[in-house]
Length: 325
Ligand code: PEP
Ligand code: MG
Image (cartoon, rainbow, N blue to C red; front, top):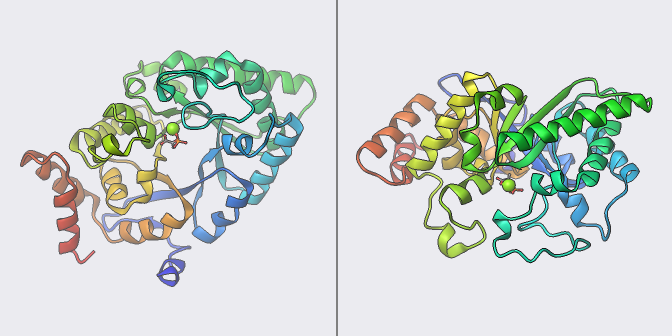
């Protein structure tokens, strides 16, 4: 099987109906970077920067981070790396951070909420990213944005950092892309201005699904009740894509579901054109995408829902089996 996928590394993820998808990889450590070439990923759609904070026993220094990010960009050899700013709290607890006694950590003080309250750490990380990029393109996204203002404030902090770096004589990035992760349903209903102001949007499907169904992603008992192929969830994804498309805001999906064949196909049929996943999934997902027609898949999904199906999983797998997939 590995050999079969190896043959696909240089081929595009193009469907039989002629739609090309971008398949990217999720990463978090320097050790993940060699997979970029071997998997044939178009880039790193999600770089989880908190992993480098989690493997240390104290807050890393700015210089240390800058050289780390610089090496990540070197290893990417010009491919785009979307650096997600620190996403701590909830399931990611730093050993050197005072534990927060919160009844609902997943809905608590985490990610951008911490970043906006503890601006020193966020500024330090943005400085490190800016210095690492020095003359190269830089892509940064903010996690867990639940309302427009959080994105607006984070973006403003980033611009202040850039101004300051320029004043200090540092070479600025050649170009800049600033995005938001859509991980709470609220953001899908943000004012138009939000979509105009974002250079891209990345759907964090793990968290989005958790909050869409109000089912803890860490709690097997409740998590398994709600299928990603539930029609309500797929329709919601379609609406998000349509809103982004209306403003020509590129949208990608980077939860674990992007790396599962049926889920990836369904997401593509809902209009998602960029999927970011663990590197080992890229071959299998590309292989299946190259053999399907997205309009047919969308029709199967809509018909399944019209016939009353709650999840389209059964009908979708039947349809694929009929095609010998
Ligand atoms: C997500 O929520 O889907 C996501 C990509 O981020 P994480 O899994 O790190 O929360
Ligand atoms: Mg998340």
